[in-house]
Amino acid sequence: MIETMRIFKFFLTISILISTASIPVSAFEVQGLKTPESFIADPSTGNYFISNINGGGPGGKDDDGFITKLDKDGKVIALTFIDGKNNDITLNAPKGLDIIGNILYVSDIDFVRGFDKETGKLLHDLDFKTFNPSSLNDLTHDSQNNLYVSDWIGNIIFKIDTKNNYKISIIAKGNALGGPNGLNIHPKTKKLINVTWEAGKVQEIDSSGNVKVLVEDKRFKNLDGIDFDNNGNMFVSSFTGGEIYKITPDLKIEVFLKGLTSPADINIDRKKNLLLIPSFEGNSAKTVTIQ
Figure 1 (cartoon, rainbow, N blue to C red):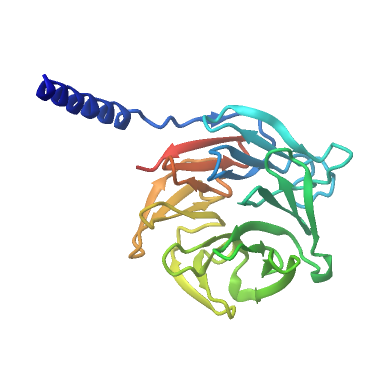
Figure 2: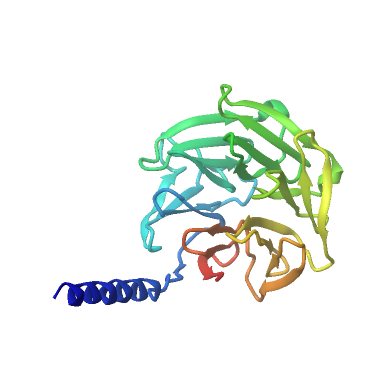
């Protein structure tokens, strides 16, 4: 009897494991957006956020930008979760998004704003006007919770020390940056990676601001977003080329997706192995399984 019970438990465990392993992660698509720029996953809750420029374009100070919030299955919790049209919120042309703890950071032309990711309440309003930025774009953070933000027209990359009263400094500046757009931290080297809008390059930037070209390819047209999967593969989007490239750790390039409409600031949900793709001109966003 005891041996029979052991056998039963063994096969029950195997059955559960097989059943769980066979459950697919469902890709999804979101319509009805307004010039979506960045699409990210919250690693702690599984929810998603999408920045919507809306209205007057990437440089328009019209206070009608908004952030959309989705649940972990991709269903819309609130289309205008954070809305510039609200009297207590200023949000002109939100682009890059990043999450540290409970704070959702958003780049907005010449500000970086921090909001409570659960309530949408404004927590931080960081003014960059002293630096005269042209157009703040992407955001990322390192293991010390330092934020980095690109000024893609002004050829500047800023650092925000969140542990030192949000002190803002310049870590790299100049034409060598090639119109810095998408930013991320390399999972192995821990160095800042920049993809260029103008130069068709993927660059590595060290703590002293030295720039090293990692990858350059004639197919790279107006690079926008960058992220890494769990295997260290780099995914890069070409806004005007309508393609997403997969770059292996040994820097081999392949076209992962093509025929897309203006893929902007892509990111990866590493828990679900989903590539998150906002379609800037398509007013939509979708996910694609990468494994």
